[in-house]
Amino acid sequence: MNFTVPLAKYPGMNRFVLDWLGGDERFLPRVGEWASGRVGERNAALADALIKSNKHWGLFVRDDVERWVNGGVALIAGQQVGFAGGPLYTIAKIASLVKMKRDLEAKGTPATVFFWLATEDHDFDEVATLNVPVSALGADKDVNRQLDLVCIRAIRTVSAHAAVGSLPVPEALVAQLMALHDIERPAWLREGITFRDSFAELIAEVFPKEVVLVDALLPELRRAGAPLFAKIREKRDDIQRALRDRSKELEGAGYKPQVEPAHDGEYTLLFHIDDDGTRKPSMDGVSTSALTRPLLQDFVFQPNVFLGGPAEVAYYAQIAPLYEMLGIAMPRVALRGHLLAAPKRIARFIERFDIAPESIFTSADAILTEKEPDGVARIRELTREGREALMTRVESIGQLALPADHSLAGSIQRSIGHLEYHFDKLAERAIKGLVRKDKERLAATRELVATLYPDRYVQDRVVGWFSYWLRYGSAMTDAMIANVEPDAAVFRIVGL
Image 1 (cartoon, helix red, strand yellow):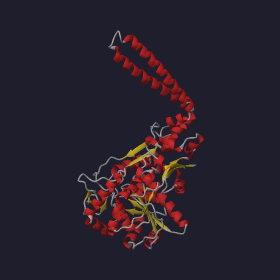
Image 2 (cartoon, rainbow, N blue to C red):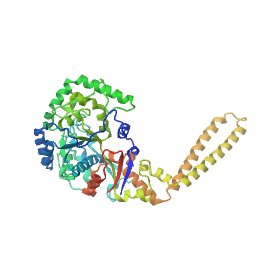
Image 3 (cartoon, rainbow, N blue to C red):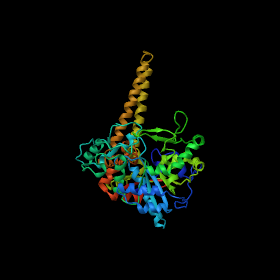
Image 4 (cartoon, one colour):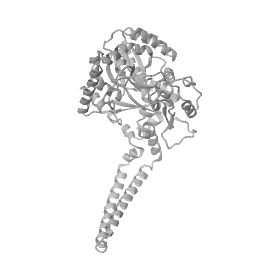
């Protein structure tokens, strides 16, 4: 039970990405084979560190890493280490990578998948927030059923610029998650565990093979990137100039650059992380910014394909001129697959009630109104006729009364405004009453919209995937891998 919808119907989709998917390669090429050869020497010390760190998380990746060291195809994506795995799009990214890997291997080309853990980021509020769908909770749960989501979060108790990966997961978050789902405390949420280790160990449970995790704070990674950091410092002025020029070009084409310069007009390139975890802009640092992280990743891992979300694709458009300047080979950039997920019972409503999948991004009432065009049109016609007749009578009253009392003009105008307002409210209530006469269809449509467009946010951007995985397990990930369409101008609605 799956549905395919044009990505242009996905609310808020980056316009640059839509044009790029449509063939506009002015700022970022789309040509190239995933398995094209472009391999230089790969770092043995980093390879050993990756094998050890992944083993610590329960992943045994020696074969995958050695395949990469020996010149195999590399695919890479990344994400913040969000509590309980973060939003659904995190799994959509990994599912896209695994799908690409399997497609390559089916053609006889082995590949290694890397997933970059953005542990150096300092957005605590983002990683310490999880939106749980109310529909995924048991009927006996004491939650407000008028809401689409239950939001659990922790209050920041650390510096606003502290790197989140090494911070312990707050006990308040753990307690809220366990209470909502009536689960025992899992090992990946044991007391004192960091956001990095918690995220990595959960991913290891969900994807016990095919994925190599990369800690952005891994010392061996920084050492492997040392020549790049030196070049960035050496060419700082040239880089700033190239970024300003490219941003002007993007703006001239009608696009908004993904990253804006700081107040001094300079783009942040590197950060320094203090002993207490505080992250501050500094050209002496070896922690990357949003603009330089792709450069480090591509310099060290030499991936054949980078797969990212719309914002990450737009980063590449902004930094594309830096690759030749710094002597780095740019990978084939691909857009992550876009997936929305719903229990099959709910997904079936789309066919059962003949609902256009893209219409879920409106409201239940709007969808139902489309299904009652004749009755709605008649109500609107009667409302228009009644308003015109009433206004004619009010005008006649004014013609009789105004010669006798000119002060009535303001009162008449106010009365007209009130009458028009109440006429419109009456029509609105009548239309709602008409479309709600089928209670089963009303309930089903509301549930569908609440699942895929909760609180008017597209599901994959905000809803935590953990609740669905807890219910469906590997059947969920299997369905997502089977149905995801990476680097495509469509999104899929997947029934679980």
